[in-house]
Image (cartoon, rainbow, N blue to C red; front, side, top):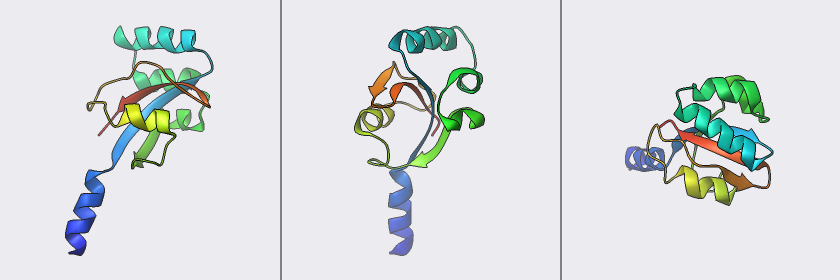
Length: 100
């Protein structure tokens, strides 16, 4: 039973990176750069205001409810490797990349 519960718990976790900026216009500009081939992690290191920028924006694994609602709603709908449009939260604007 423990193993089954552990597998179910892992199935509800995802791993994402993000880039956090103050302005929507900046987030949109960065998204275009990423679409043109700039590495997501490099952009996160260069401009993200989140401490996770030191790790290419990597937030690690998390389950629903661990992040703010607006972030969660988008992150859990992304496909692996997909990058979101800008997501507004109380912290600013996020670009979210689903890693797993």
